[in-house]
Amino acid sequence: MSKTFNLYCDESTHLQNDTHPYMLISYVSCAYPQIKQHKEYIKLLKAKHKFKGEMKWSNISKSQYPFYADVIDYFFATDLKFRSVIVAKSMIDESREGFTYSDFYFQMYYQLIYHKICPDYTYNLYLDIKDTCSQGKLVKLGDILNHAGSIRNIQFIKSYESYLMQIADILMGAINYHIRGLNTVIAKNKLIEKIQSHASIDLQKSTPKSEEKFNLFYIELK
Image (cartoon, rainbow, N blue to C red; front, side, top):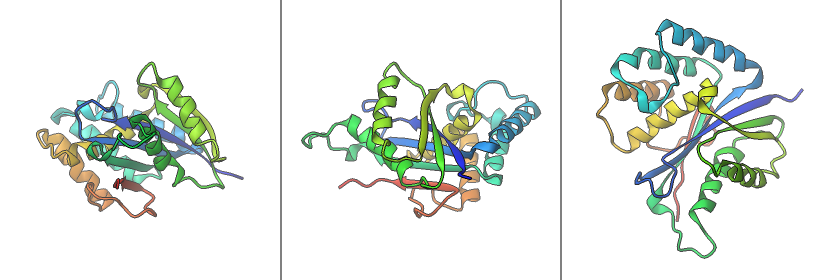
């Protein structure tokens, strides 16, 4: 029987003129039968720490550190997987004929997903809906991945509807914060140290393509 995985995708500082130096697109992958298990455990952690609302990297503070630390520990103790592709926007050359920033954005999604999917499995992709252009984005992404027969479904959801998409936001936010050299929030610095310790990697470098648990791909454009 073929296995099914859900990929919960999110983006960080991906807009062309947002003044941020890096574009990141990431996902957390979960085996379909385990979704309920992860949801219930995160609920327990939220109750334990009396945490309310959505988990977001941008909202992390000293008082919330114990909760987010438990979430990171849980991620690394389970079969959940994370992958992110990262590129410095200064390297994107729109002067090339027939090339646009939008084209490159979709190429990033292709790089994120296509090279890590297994043809023997099926996948459902869930993307964080962010703007009024989302439906057109969905159609375009579907066209790009159409020849990857393993993709069964692509749809948008609100990030508050999915704990696993929120975990993607936390892990991706940690990478973005770290590579930009930011260090003003002690709780965030401690979470970054925890992630690096668990993963045994340098968050500023690509991991081997074969890395399954915490995979990073820094795209170098020529």
